[in-house]
Image 1 (cartoon, helix red, strand yellow):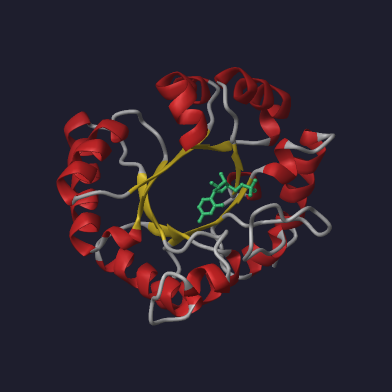
Image 2 (tube, rainbow, N blue to C red):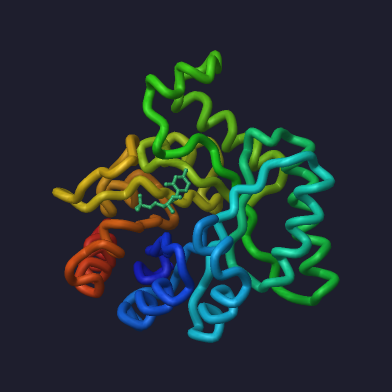
Length: 239
Ligand code: C5P
């Protein structure tokens, strides 16, 4: 995979116009975008169509979690949009994950389109040890992340969203083809914001991430194109 295809820029904006302006500004420097809840609720399918028309890959980050039947129905609708990656919460449990897998595969086959890669969120990268303790799980964060990644794999999912700090353990547990998409990526010296479990772009790739998601370090930079190019250059150099 080329470095340019491993950087996913998070379009966390309240309007489609702001997102489109950034995409136009970044131009060919960025090939992959993430549309999350804020932008999707504001701009809906129109922003997905805009990105696809621009030849971009799209990760639709809606983090679905509900009863299996509801998630399956929603994923059938989202699969028809022709996005490249789509996701659910692993804590929805095995039945939900299996139903999600079946829905995406069946819908893509019915529409004769390539199925989007279906990945599961393990533990949010904003979660630190104190917040995690409040949830009363019996495992530590790394143990829980690896357990959820194994579960996602057993249920036929294509990968997970996780912190770069857990990427190495997931890579070891889930094999070379499993997607590991890591937000919580901060170039050296960048503000951490609300992220807790962070690494640099090169650090995330070294740890085994297949893709890195970067939002504010690019979208809030004075020179956004230079910020994106610097990150691509940094991950290109990872051996
Ligand atoms: O601005 P920043 O680089 O922190 O953006 C990270 C993006 O990745 C946000 O859109 C956030 O919703 C998303 N994300 C995350 N942690 C996860 C899953 C998604 O930060 N576990």
